[in-house]
Amino acid sequence: MISSRIGLLCMSFFSFAAAQDPLPAAATVMDRYVSVTGGREAYEMLKTEVRTVLLELKGRDMRFTVTTYRAKPNRMYTITEIPGVGKVEEGVDGDVAWNLSEARGAALKQGAERDFALYGARLDAEVNWKEWFPKAEVVSTEEVEGRTCYKLVLTDKDGEQHSRWYDKEAGLLVKLLLQVKLPQGQFPMEMRFYDYRETGGLLQARRTVRVMPGQEMESRVEKIETNVEIDPARFAMPDAVKALLEKQQPGA
Image (tube, rainbow, N blue to C red; front, side):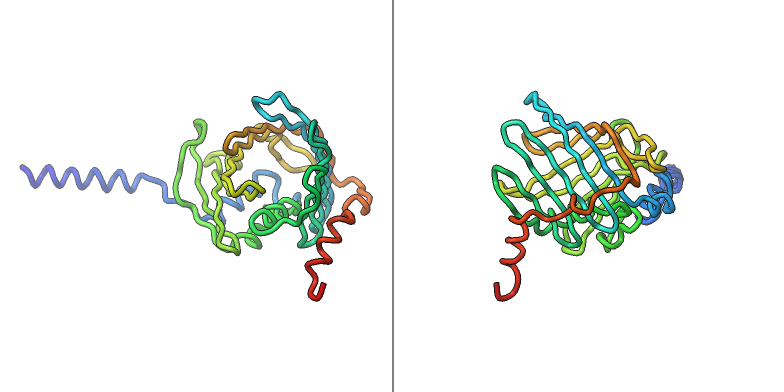
């Protein structure tokens, strides 16, 4: 009798295990995201983008507009006017990422912060994700706001890791978690993506919520213009940033 029960329990266990879907390869999940958001060809056809976003700091009744210009292969310029702080500029030119503010002056981004900026500057980053993440693994399935998601852990060239959650059914990016370096130290930042809509042949999230310790920001895309002409001068480095680069040159 006991042996029969044990046999039934074993059969039940193995039947349950067999019924569970095996986890897909990370490349399968990433490639599916590219496919459902428009496909490789749509990403390759995108040459420039101008994005205007309304950013709100939750609990502080503060709103301001962020405008980002991007152009292939790897140029980006962002300008923000923050009440009480002034103008904040950020940019990427090739492998150099920088920021400039009236409050803190000029700075060159380093480490994970620099890599994140370089990734964001590339209009085709999602197609060529392996350039940044030589290692990627699907580690589990998890529920995120009622949606079953594949959780991926991606490792960059410096060994830094961040996690992404992709909707198992829709294939869209739902959440990501990474570490960001600020003057105050290094902190986790969670981003959640909502309201995907098509613009210029690509499906993109129109609302993003970013959560850091003691701070929550919500951004809503007001306008996206694709393949428009952008004056190359828009991406020019400010003199203060050029001076920092010169100091880093050998023999400077």
